[in-house]
Image (cartoon, rainbow, N blue to C red; front, side, top):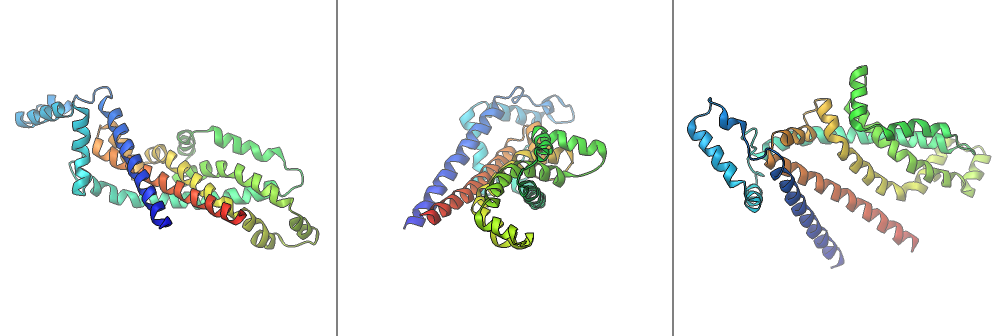
Length: 288
């Protein structure tokens, strides 16, 4: 009974958040400057009937609640509406791009975690940690994702996976380094180091299991960090994923596409938060 109530509560929160995202996104797009204007109405290549339909559409979308109802009606049909820019169902645009963005995120997360864990182990192992490790991390944290992508393009090196990996690794490094410093001071680790136990054995049997409960919340933070940077990275590197599609939808006022992508991002963040809460619950249960 308890798990069923927990699932029902999560679904209710997810639905409420998605509705808030839809209402907020529609509000921002509807009242953006120039939303009710359409350059096609002045294009002589379009017939008078088409221009009349565009005028009727602009009048219909003046009502905010009517606009929300019109855009969300496509979700009831299962196609998430019709793209204003491409004239096809939104689901046909999302399906191929989700695999592209998912592959990019997976590659970036794996690379970021490998780099962050290796750097955190090297930085936290000495008895007196050096501040030199903090310099490149501080630089990476200060650089926006768009600036990092621009530097890669100007130097003709790296790619979208590298930019996302560096962004995620810089944030994860600080948490991993702090957690490992406490583990290195554990009496069993000190004894193992004094006896000359190999590093890979200490990692396998002591270090990584000790910080394992903290990896779940950190993984959730990594996913949220990657999603926040996916739009500028895909746009600058011309990656045909959800981030580039969201940018094109915003530039062309393609509200159905923008709402669908925003709702997907909100659900992804909620799923990441669910994994984090489950990890916290497991830690509390173990402590008890």
